[in-house]
Amino acid sequence: MEQDWIWGLVGGGLIGLGAAIYLLVNGRIMGASGILGGLVDGSERANWRERLAFLAGLVLVPIAVVPLYTEVDTHLTGNLGIVILAGLLVGVGTRLANGCTSGHGVCGISRFSLRGIVATVFYLLAGGVTVLLFKHVLGVI
Amino acid sequence: MRALFGFIAGGIFGAGLVVSGMTDTTKVQGWLDVFGDWDPTLAFVLGGAIVPMAIAWRLTMGRRPALGGTFPPPPEPTLGHNLVVGSVLFGAGWGLAGLCPGPALASLSYGGLGGLVFLAAMAAGMLAAPPVRGWVDGLAGSS
Image (cartoon, rainbow over all chains, first blue to last red):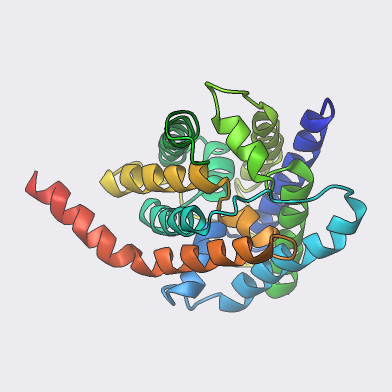
């Protein structure tokens, strides 16, 4: 669709606004994998209330937004083997790298963090190679 | 108050992920599909998110967070093998399914069974990270 880039820009602005509020008000870096991971493995018991509240907003507010949006679907593959493998890789990888698209990408690049820039380059490259391999060579996604 | 603003920040983040198309795996895989039918939307998402955040980082200078405490320390200058190995693993998973942690959570209400399975596998992967990190450290140390 022609308007996709406008929605991308508007949605991106909201993502940045959420990250800015979490930084300027709570004093924390908004990284989805870190906020979730610290609760999952219990490594970050401090601030668990604001982490849980953040995750609650992240899960619940889209329920209110979705009815305004006519066509919303993740279009996730029905191949559960691929889904499980992908989930495991995302879980391990983001904890090893200590960040994902939000923490390294949005919050890191915006303050010219070398770690954020290097992480973003490597996950984009790996994502591109994976799509090339699994879509165009193997044809499984 | 900290929890309230945590909820507000998470909610705006989640709404932004839905509106931008980041929870649509075909858009994400289209962005990564440089050699196929490339979809540039995610460049606008990232650009749109980085601008307010860059302003926010400027506003932290010489100030304190509104609810007290301190701002995060400057980014670590060291890279390390875990940053690279982890990012490559994460990128591979992101390319395979088209979901990263934020959108996986934001799409929970409409992602169906697949979305739940992805989230459970992601949590399992997070729990498996410490031994994997030890293994990677061992490989890096012995080379």
